[in-house]
Image (cartoon, rainbow, N blue to C red; front, side, top):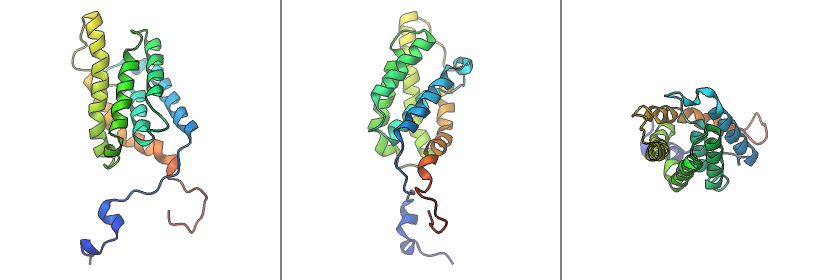
Length: 182
């Protein structure tokens, strides 16, 4: 027979998360460089293909705001602008705003599970793309239509997978012990 809610351990009442190991800063930068390289692939310009670098920047801005910040977002934004031969600064502005809002909301976002976090990340991704396309529309006079929103929806849907993959090295035990329950 199940116990009454008042007699359950605190961890069951509040949805406690397991303790994580500290993240290696080299791992953070490695994941950002890999995400940047994925964005450099030719299919990155197709509709419905998410901005993996933006997703990775949000993730690390939420989980490690002191180790990754707006400088990294600005740097990778400039690299994306140079790669796409666009106006220098449009991605830098968008990624910097993305990092700022993610850092501002990082405590709130961490209270939720992966699905709730994805719902919080979706508006951040939409604002990022809206900034990029607004700058392009203001300078070139063309609007890409509303299909650009699909990229953000797909990236937000990938958030639970990114959460599992990027936190996996922190979830392992510091020393292997077969008698340890965690």
